[in-house]
Amino acid sequence: MTPNRITTLFGIRYPIVQAGMIWCSGWELASAVSKAGGLGLLGAGSMYPDQLRDHILRTQQATNRPFGVNLPLLYPDIDAHIQTILELKVPIVFTSAGNPKTWTSILKAEGRTVVHVVSSAKFALKSQEAGVDAVVAEGFEAGGHNGREETTTFCLIPLVREAVHIPLIAAGGIGSGRGMLAAMALGAEGVQVGSRFVATPESSAHAAFKHRVVEAGEGETTLTLKELTPVRLLHNSFYHQVTAAYERGAGAEELKALLGRGRAKKGMAEGDLDEGELEIGQVSASIRHVTPAAEVVREMVSEYNRFRINFPILDEFQE
Amino acid sequence: MTPNRITTLFGIRYPIVQAGMIWCSGWELASAVSKAGGLGLLGAGSMYPDQLRDHILRTQQATNRPFGVNLPLLYPDIDAHIQTILELKVPIVFTSAGNPKTWTSILKAEGRTVVHVVSSAKFALKSQEAGVDAVVAEGFEAGGHNGREETTTFCLIPLVREAVHIPLIAAGGIGSGRGMLAAMALGAEGVQVGSRFVATPESSAHAAFKHRVVEAGEGETTLTLKELTPVRLLHNSFYHQVTAAYERGAGAEELKALLGRGRAKKGMAEGDLDEGELEIGQVSASIRHVTPAAEVVREMVSEYNRFRINFPILDEFQE
Image 1 (cartoon, each protein chain N blue to C red):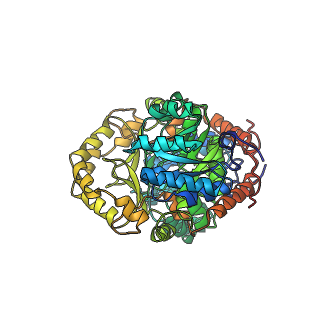
Image 2 (cartoon, rainbow over the protein chains, first blue to last red):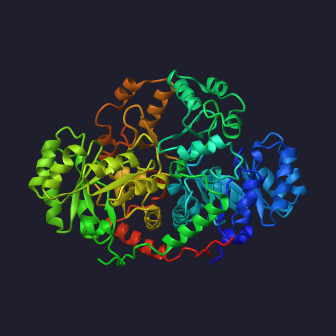
Image 3 (tube, rainbow over the protein chains, first blue to last red):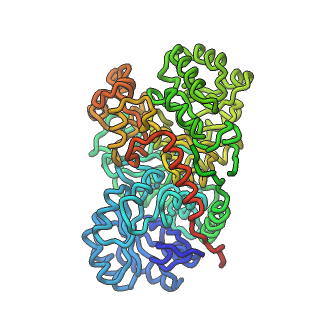
């Protein structure tokens, strides 16, 4: 076993991070992944402060392995979440959707490991300057909210690798051992996996949404609502309403009204596959089964090791 | 040296194909890449029939290594191009932008190797059924014309790998040895490289365009004109005219009129960086120098070999 900067930073066995996704990443999923040797993250973005407290306590009861919380920095009651994280001694915080300057120094002063999620080399560098321990670089193919530059994982990872010296975790499109190997080839030291962990018995997504993810084929997700915050959605009735709105020339205000409030919960947590917002990555086209979280980790490690030693050898170039 | 199905199919040393790009891929580039052990392709899409004949003859004078022609199947005078390819005994034909059914059997009957370029697993399967010898699967990050599904290289290659049994070449976002390694990890047996070969002395692109490619940073290309044929363009005055047209709600007809005719030639061959259409991939953000084509091949092979043996080893999973 070769430890690397990601396994060492988090004190974990495998450089596999389970994304802290809204409506999908509760204590059952996070603790299952951490028990399996990866890093489980709670998705604080869809939890009220008392719910986050409850999920942290349950994760701590379920495992003494390291785990973390994903905290969107635009969360309205963020002070309450930060307070809970500090009080309950959560060791690792992944921040996203906001400026890492505000909270990084406070969390670092309390001895926490801080990782920020970015979609460009420019913001990776700003995160490094803000003092984070590592960055997640997330490509265009990722599910949910995403960057405006539309840089794909294949192009983003080398750019971020070149821009920063801190440890780098790749995200977007990764749900297999071969994907992990490809991410490492491009310069990542670990991977963050979202969609694949949605389709686990332990994820808190509604069973109907998990089933829909398994059914999804190629070309069935699109990055849309770019005038608001770009988000990758699975095609359904709501998505087609958005498309129709664009066709009649709707502006940001009309799109905002159409989106309304609570659509992500309706789709992902309550299983309304027609009217809900279904956030998932392009890699859903490769997901064929609901698989226990530990088995996802096992499969990824096994496939990674199998293909790691299987690359063709090329002769060095001679004129 | 491990031969694989791509090096064997084409009779080449390295599984590196230089894309047959309009306005950039003439005989100087194709012969330089073939001499270096890759597969050079002439870009027939921007050549009149007598020009294609001339470029084929010059390539044959420059090298006796294998080379090929990229032929967009929507080319207006395609019968003339096919006739030239058959008459001058070009051994390898990459077809794109059209239905492979029409010409594959004719080219195969004449003993030519036929490869079709696709952007989805669905069309990879149709190409296999049409009898092609291999497919190029090209992701969303690629320059120039592209698929509507927007599937990235990271997600596309595993889907195509699973869908077809014929040899698979990855394209889109690949311009380095690490990129080649990542593509192989995802299931490809070779790579097609476009943008990186634009920025070579041997490419027939205008010097001003090559310089602009080298200067391009992250987020400076966008897939646009989706109502016509989706195309990835470098941001310039023409691109901003397109953006402005969208903002005033322009339809397909207005966009078509704005695009007009000859813009790709104007930008890429004549070096009009303002009014021309500049087709290039996202990987342009990682291209820093104009580098001789043989040196690109050498660098890619050397970097591939260096990183191939450098992956961390993971312990097999245990409960």
